Image (cartoon, rainbow, N blue to C red; front, side, top):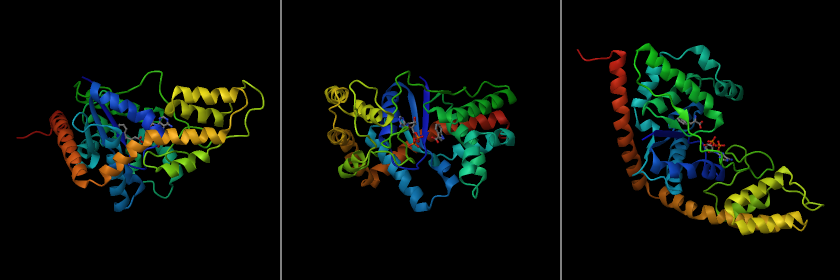
Amino acid sequence: MDIVLSGIRPTGKLHLGNYFGAMKNFLKMQHENNCYFFIADYHSLTTHPTPADLHGSVKQVLAEYLACGLDPEVATLYIQSDVPEIPELYLLLNMNAYMGELERCTSFKDTIRKQPDNVNAGLLTYPTLMAADILIHRSHKVPVGKDQEQHLEMTRTFANRFNRMYNVEYFPEPVAYNFGEKLVKVPGLDGTGKMGKSEGNGVFLADDPDTIRKKVMKAVSDSGPTEPNQPKPEAIENLFSIMRIVSTPDTYTFFDEKYNTCQVRYGDMKKQLAEDIIKVTTPVREKIEGYLADNAYLRKVARLGAEKARESASKTIKEVRSIIGFKEF
Ligand code: ADP
Ligand code: TRP
């Protein structure tokens, strides 16, 4: 069975894009593969969060993963900082990671442009930590978007370099897990581009119904079509795209026909869209709130995950140490 691994940085709340674009696929995957899903809290230290923020974000993401339906009995769901074997592998991989290749990494160049006052070694070696995350379970597949492809490529470089250096075939070459052609892309509410955490254009799973209504009513639209059967401008197409994802086919067809006959009223359409989003998010939001109020359960999940993750991680580290030459006399 393939080993599938994905990590999420605890930097904000999950939005509809994460839900339909990633979580829904994770739910299917967990039954078809040996899955590891982890919260990348070490990675988030590169931006120096306060202890309270760090702790709160990790808790939020864990509650959200569970609320979406990740099953801690089926998949291994863990917090990165609970697995000390990861930083150990990170240290070992760093010995063969070169300044040049780390400095050339696009995400490093982007980040130092954005935070020139905090160019720390953690940022430079972000790809080595990510490689350690992946290689610690000798993962085969990593379900990530295009923006992570370069990190994955570096992981393959580090894995191959290790294999070559010690003349072993120890680490597999991890590849991106593509969900096929039908990758759902959820657009944002600001008229252009996809929904994202930092863009301020998203609906979060944890948003209450009133917040969702306000956000959707404020979504960018226009004064409506003036001629029948015209292509939709991007902002309008985006509203219809979200509707296609959250509403019934009948609802979608109803408004599509209204659009094509120039009778669409965006106020009505947005009202309907908001209610259909609320229908999707409400059960998830209620579960998030339930998990957030149940520290004992979250602790249990984290402990179980750490135990399962460490079982696999300690096996890898033991073998890696022996390959490198750390052996008992
Ligand atoms: P964000 O834009 O919120 O920072 P991330 O980059 O952390 O999102 O993405 C986490 C996962 O969610 C990725 O697998 C990504 O492909 C998916 N995802 C994020 N935004 C969207 C979106 N608008 N539509 C579809 N999938 C998305
Ligand atoms: N770098 C990823 C992101 O920014 C998060 C991440 C860290 C990750 N370690 C990983 C993703 C390992 C997949 C595998 O989204």
